Image 1: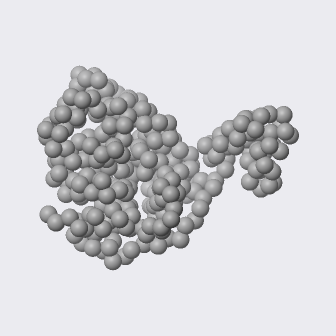
Image 2: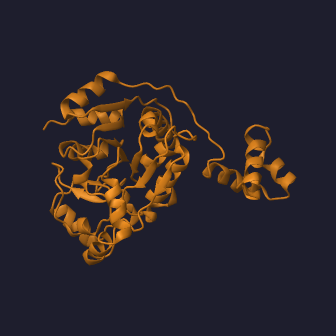
Image 3: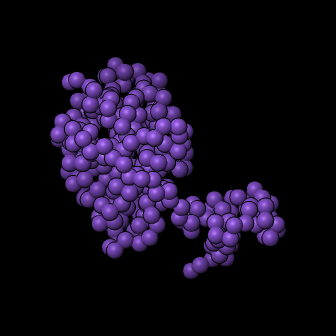
Length: 318
């Protein structure tokens, strides 16, 4: 049922995007402040009442893609060009737009989609066009909630957003990403509500995720405060090279025997190898070692990246 709030949001969006009115005009007509009109407009976008997409020209580097596929034995590599003279915010948006254009067909043809968290995944999902798919599917949150990273990058928010855009149902993971103790983690994994989601994840047709570099400035887990000083010492001693879905791996993609890995709630890295299409979305030369760990561990079938990252990846000599 359409609410009065939905009607108000739609009217504000129409006035701004199609009616050519400014925020001050809309605010005056509604008897609201300009800041309130701005918040209403943003709410309309957040609730998918407005679908704005910039259709960047899809320019890919086929020779580099073929080299990555051959060298690392994966099915699909998508390497996008990087125009000069654009800021980091537009670079990320452009990347998300190109990735969405590349994988949207696969998502819409899948019955069961698993999705991770983080800024790369978030910007891709935000660029998926809104509209129901031909089939009724399910989007599943691949790991516990990472709310400390901010609402926009949280797995639950992203999973629900993707489900709304595809016209699918959403199945969320009722747990934090990393819990305080191993005992709590074991209890949660044995609970019916968590077990049912984990079992569903193992049957996913496609999983969209990214990868983190544990000691870089871009590490989501480090910025979120999930890693204590003791955790970081343990990870350094064990030469951690990557974190995927909250789990830490060595340079060869092997799961490290560190305490924090026993406190993560979500699909296990080993289960990724059984999913037909695991899509790794990642950019940044500081993440090359992490990407190599994922490729060596055979955790993904597809990679979505940019030219600088691909060049750095191919420059590594094993």
